[in-house]
Length: 474
Image 1 (cartoon, rainbow, N blue to C red):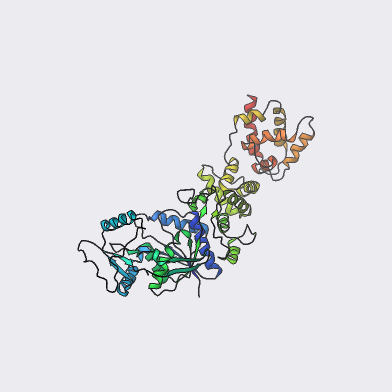
Image 2 (cartoon, rainbow, N blue to C red):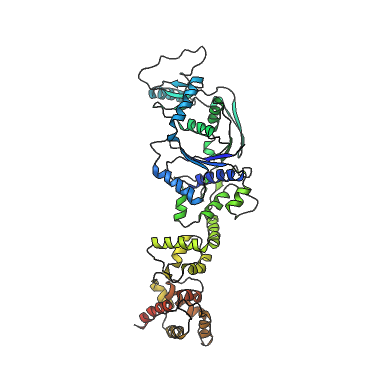
C-alpha cells in the first residue's frame, strides 16, 4: 500500500502555526514511507473563503519548503463529483431528503431544551420500513441528510490518542447537502479522502468529533477507512490555547519577524514529538526519524525562547551569501542601502554570532551603511575632555599608519591601540575603546572595536572620528 497523506486547510484566514505543524507531520510521514503528500483547499465556505487566504497558505507552504506531490485540489471545483456521490447515496437509501423548515427545527430545539434533552434532529423525514412520512411541502427546498446508524459503536485506533469509541446513539443524521444543493464540509471531506485514496489522516484533535460521522459515511460508501491521527492542541507561552484570536500568527509573520524557515520547521517538529534527546536536526533527518508513536497525546506548549535559541543556531549555520541576500532586503525596507564596501558578508561574519533573529541582525549592522547618530548622553559620558587628546593622537596614528588597502585588511588596528595604551601612564583599553564605539557605531555595544574598524576601513573610520572630534573642539 502506498502511503497517501493530505493537508486540507480552509482558506478563511492565514496559515497559522498549528496548521503548519499538521502540514509538516503529514508531509514527513509521506516522505518517510516514500508516499504521496496531497494539498487540498477546502473552500466550500464561500462567504469566508478568499483568494488572499489561499495565497497566504501557498506562501507559507512554499516558505517552509513543504512541497506537495499532488494538488492543490479545490473543493469548489469538484461539485459535480460530490453531487454524483450524493445521488448514489440517495438511490442506495443511505441518505434522504429532509423538508423541515428553519422554524420547525427551532421549535423542536426549544422544546427539547425545555425538557432538558440534548437538542438534535428527531429524524421525522428519515425513511424506515413501515413508517409514514409527512406530506412533502411545496414551498420548502429540502436538505439532504445522512442516514446515520442508530445502534452500535464507532471505534477506531487513533495513532496518537489510542482507541476511541463513540456510540451511534450520540450522533444525529447530519446534513450533507444544503437546500441550495451545496454539499457540506463533512461530506466533501469523506468523498475527497475516499477518491484521493488517503491512507492516513493527520489533523488537529478539534476534528475528533467529526471522525465517527466520516467513518460511518465511508462505510456507507463501501470505502476503505483511513487511519486517523489527531494532534493535540498547541498552548501559547502563557498556557492558553494557541488560536487565531490568541497569539497565533501567520507563518509568514515569522518570516517578517526575522526567523529562518529551518528554525521554524525544527521547532515545529519538536512541538509534541521527540526523538530521544535530539534538539537540532534537519528535515532529512526528521523524515527518517518521524513516526506517529512518539507524538504526545497531551497539549504541546509553545516556547518562544526555545524558538529564538534555534533561530540563533540556524543564523550561525546559514549560507553566508543567502544570509546576505536576505539581510540586504531587510535593510532596504528600512531605507538603508547596502554598498559594495564594506562587503556585507564580512559584516555578517562579525555579527551573526550575536543575533537570534534576522531583523535584529539587520538593525545591528545598519551603521556600516548609514552614518549612525550617537545618543547625546553617550557622547557626553565617553567622549570627555580628558580623553579627547588621546583620541586626537590615535586618529593621527591611524592616519599615518599604512592600512595596506582602504578596507583595513593589512593592518592590526588592535595592536596599534594596545601599543598606545601600553605607552601611556593612565590610559586603559576600555577607556579608549568606548568612545571609539560611540563615534564609529553610534552605540556602546559592538564586537571588538578593532574588528569593526578593519571592516569599516581607514577612510570611513577617520571620517567618523573627525565628525565627533570636530564637534568637541567647537
